[in-house]
Image (tube, rainbow over all chains, first blue to last red; front, side):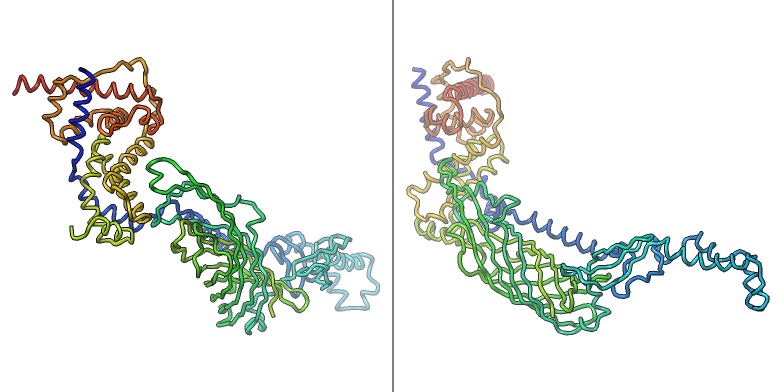
Length: 383
Length: 185
């Protein structure tokens, strides 16, 4: 009896709800339409972009700030007679006093100058006065640190030897042989060509496709430190000066990179049934070729360096992932770089740390779109 | 409707916005009806509704032909409600000593029959979430306790206890309504 009542209740409920419709959802179409157009879960690229911007800003502040950390002059060198002092050429107070002879000695000097004959018969104090004056000069020489620019070659490029004189000891000290800032160097205002080879450390940001029927649960790239992240970027760059400080840069370049991605996903129909989790591992190794155009601004400071910003357009060739992971065919990257120019003989070497982010991480048809994020150091020569 | 359902689904598969709107108009009442049964508030129902509708559209984009579309959409909505429950469920333990069966009376059935679907949904909304879901799955959808236990990640005995609690609460309210009607007509 009781059981049958339960069945009766079940029949009532089933009949009541079988064709039941509620009108409460009508007004929610706009939310759903918006979601259908813009849903993009788990975009991991935003954090990296912020981090990159902060890094570039910090680097710019660092490089535009005070550069000189010691009184080392590049080309003229430092005279062996020049004092090494924390405040540059400012003399210590006690030295100023010592270089002024006492009043009595001054009078003896005047007497000696005006009447040489008298000087010949002068008492020993007069000789003492001469000795005093000359000894103050000698003390300046011996008691202070000095650097001598010897222009000796160092076995390593970019370095040259300078003598460090301290008391009676002389040391040979390697210093960076930097190119003087381009503003004071006529040769730098000419068209120049640079051959560069860069080693890059690559990361990727991944964007699941909101328009497919897959739900990505977990997307994992390579660990933070991995040799697999290393890439290679050879390039030829042309510099065309516009003003003393600004030049246009154009380059032809190639890029090789590799990355691994591991991810777990479900078809939406399986999400509802809470089953069929699928795991995949994809390795992408690809070459791309392209060119770039940008501007360089010569930064102030002793060492010649500049802040470069450029836009790169690349075309992927070779491996493009698989049907699940895709790369945007024509990636456009923004690169920020700070090249340093170092001198070794007649060649200007360039050391260029840089970073780049992708600007057009548009969705591909695949389930995950991969956008590159690169930091690197390129070394090359400019002529 | 200007188009047949298969044609509409085909156009939705190609992300035609007009077709998506037409399908929404066709489906929203039924889907929201299910969401209301499984929710204790309008906000919760709307959350489940939106999530379910997005899943429906995404799934159609992948596979334009779906057998028995409305039954499939209903099942997907129910599963979305269950997922929603999983996301929000508290870790409260179920006391097994209450597992003694409670049954509705014929009088309860009579009272329930006189109520509209909206009134029954309002009645169900007084139940705690886990009891409401078990009640719906068992009494309306016809799932066994074993199936419910699998879906909700519960012990089968816990599903029975939750149904018993739900019934007890509903019987109590139905009785109060009956008394109220007898007194005030």
